[in-house]
Every structure is written in structure tokens, then in C-alpha cells.
Image (cartoon, rainbow, N blue to C red):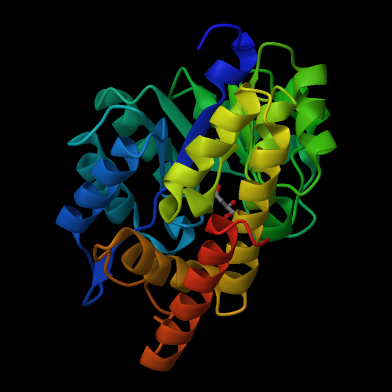
Length: 298
Ligand code: FW2
């Protein structure tokens, strides 16, 4: 791969892995199989207990269960520990350290509106007191607050950020204000843009069902085949937009099974699994989208 700009070779594809449930319990074997399959497809790291993993719906014990299952497969893990209980957050951060996890992450305390910036800063500083490598998971539209580049500078101890944000400029701002910090964009629609702009990579839920496509986008961008990369990105966009119409997270379970060919259980209510009719409809439409792009008809 001579002649490829260094920054593009290093752009990481990180998957916020789903959590497979059966009868209300995490199915550890399915999680391990899914993790192995994603790594074989070329993803670089596994983000555990993210949004797609239904992090806010998991007990501390379940977050730990997910971590231990993934660690049986790989040490390339980011362990998301956020919750609304500081004691639990710190205890999970310590647990991560004891288990040798290199990187942990947290979203900001959600639900409570009007928290002053000083409390957000303190929340992250307390986590940094428990672990050497802490990433911010910034997701303003879900969490209700934006931990922006200036706030990150004030926190001072964060080593990276996963910014789920439709504005690439917002993600780039972290780099400008905090040189040396790792910055990943978390929007499925900005995989190509994240790589091409020199961010450290992407954290994309779509990597659960089309990991090879994301790996291919990275390759095309690094080879300067931007038009081809854009086409693949548009295919991902169409799939994501279709899936969102049925409820994104429940749809991901269906798409993994339908596209990748193995079972990953179900989501946990209130993210109810799709019914049979919806499953079939979603999958038929998804396959048509993929065929259209594969036949170059898009
Ligand atoms: C996660 C992600 C991806 C989400 C994105 C939201 O933790 O699941 O932020 O899929 O639509 O990073």
C-alpha cells in the first residue's frame, strides 16, 4: 500500500457492537461469534455498551458481562461505562482497568437538563481518576448536552472523543482545540468524510451489518478513488435511512442476520424486536438497495 497518506492508513473503523438478548438475558456466545465475525471482516476495535449495544438499558453487571465476553475474543476494546450513578461509573472504570482494558469511554450524564458545565467537567475528571485512557462519547442529540471542544480542553484529561454528530466541522474542532487527541466521528453517513478529512476514524453502527463495505470505503479513499468510495457511502446511507424507518437498533439485528447470515438474538424492550412482516419487508428492501449498487445502477 505504498504511497498511501499515513493518516488514511491509520483511520480506524470501530464498531459499536450490538448486545444479543434471548429471553431477556445477554447471549454471550452470540456476542462472541458476532465480535469474531466483525474482526475477520476488518474492523479495528469493538465499542462495548454504546448506543447500539443499548448501554443505557444495561445494568452494571450486564455491562461487565458484555466486556468479559468481548475480551475473550479480543483486547481491541473500548469499554463504555457511562450511567447516571457516579459510583457505578467509577466502579466499572476500575473494573476495566483491572481487566487490562486500554480505553474506556463515557457519555455525559443525560436526562438531567440544565447541568452547569462545571458538573460535566467534574464528571469526566472523576472518571479520569480511575483510568489512564478515557474517551468522551459525545452524542448531543441523545444526551441533551454538547460536550464541545472547549469543554474537553477544560476537562484536560481526555485522550479521545467519539462525536456522534452530523457536523464534521464539530468533530474537526476537537482536533483544532486539542491537538494530539484522537477524534472519531460517529455518524453512519460520514464514514467516508471522517477518513478523508484526516480524523482518526469512524464509530459506525452500520459496521454491525456491512463491515466489509466500511473497510472498502477506507481502502477506496486511501487509493484516491473518491467517487467509488462515495458510491459505497451512499449505499450505506440508503440502508441506514431504510432501517431508521423501522427503528434503527431493532433493525440492525435483522440486517445482521439477513446480510451476514448468523443469528444475533434480539434487542431488549422497549426496543421491541420487529415482527415477521416488518423483518421480511426490511430485508427485501435492503437486498434491493445492495443489488442496485452492486449492479452499478445507482
Ligand atoms: C453507538 C455509536 C453509533 C451511534 C449512531 C447513532 O455507540 O452506537 O452513535 O449509530 O445513530 O457510536
